[in-house]
Amino acid sequence: MRSFMQAIIITFTLIAVGVGGFYGYLKLKQYQADQFSHANNQAPIYIVLEPIYQAMFRNGHVYQTRQYVIQLETRPGDPYKLAKANVPRIRDMIIAVLNSLSTRTGPQSLDNIEYVRGEILQKISTDLRPGVVFNLAFMGISTEPPLE
Picture 1 (cartoon, rainbow, N blue to C red):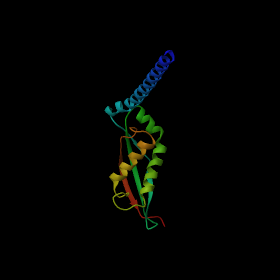
Picture 2: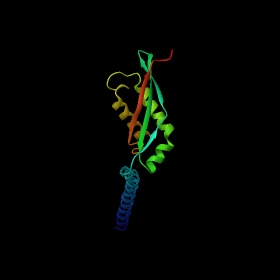
Picture 3: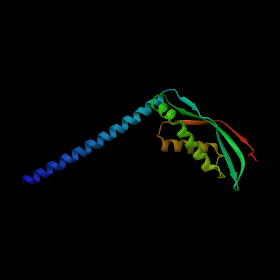
Picture 4: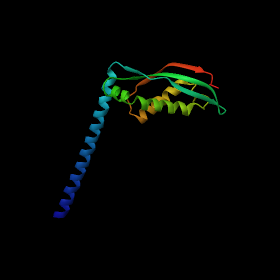
C-alpha cells in the first residue's frame, strides 16, 4: 500500500511539474509576442531598400528587365532593430521571390503586384519572424528592354 501511495504522489508531482513547465513556456511566448504587438500602436518606420533588378523570362529568353524600389514598413523598438540588422537577408528573400515568379504568367506572376507583395511578406514572416515587417510598398517599378 505504501509503494502504491508513493507511485501516486510521484505521478502527480511529475504531472504538476509538466503542467507548470508548459504554462511557463506559454507565458514566455506570450511575453515575446507582446513585445512585438506593443509596437503596433506606434508610428511606422520606413526602410527603403536599394533597387533590385529582375530579368523577365518568356520562352526561355529575357524579354525585359525590371527595376524594383521597395520600402519596408516596420515599428520602433525590436521590430525595427531586427529589420535593420537583416536588410541584406530581407533583400535576398525578396530576390528569391522575384526569381521564383519571373517565369510565370497569369495571376500568379510578377504582373500581379498585390500577389507579389503578399508572397514577399509571407516569405519574410516565415523566414525571419512575424511582425518584423508589417507592410511593404513598391516605390517604383520601371521596365527596360534586355541588354543585348
